[in-house]
Amino acid sequence: MKLLVFSTVIPTKKNLRVNTFQTIHRSLKKRIPTELIWVVYQPDQFEKIMMDDQTIYCIQDFNDGVDLLKKLNPDLVLVPNRKEPIQHSASLAGKTLGIPLIGFSGAKIDKINENGPEEIVIKTAKAEGKKCPVCWKINIKPCERHFS
Image 1 (tube, helix red, strand yellow):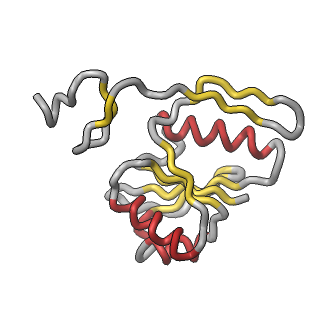
Image 2: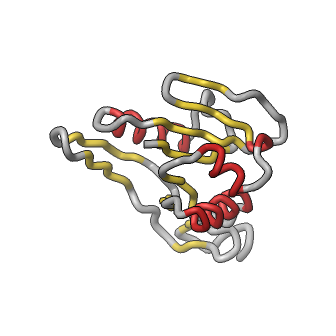
């Protein structure tokens, strides 16, 4: 199974998104053959990077979301629930090409339990508060940037 994830950093640098999807990838590949495909969007262009069963591409290697998905041919596209143009383009392309999308928000893995060969349980924590209608950040208090 080929999983496609977008990132603002090259996954050799660790952040919450990188750690989350690498953890999910490690658990999945114990059960099924899995390849993790990263598409990094940043101003500086770089050459494709191969790391074990992960491949890292530069967004500038593609013309648009349809071109990206046709060339990389993922089985699943993981997109955040934010209004970012690159993810929106990939979401529209995925719907057009019939590639399933999984949305995520504030991904934080608390624990992964492997209950036998057929079941992986991933426990996550839900953010507390309300979502700002402008920036979509979840806060207990009103958003300081937009409602102060």
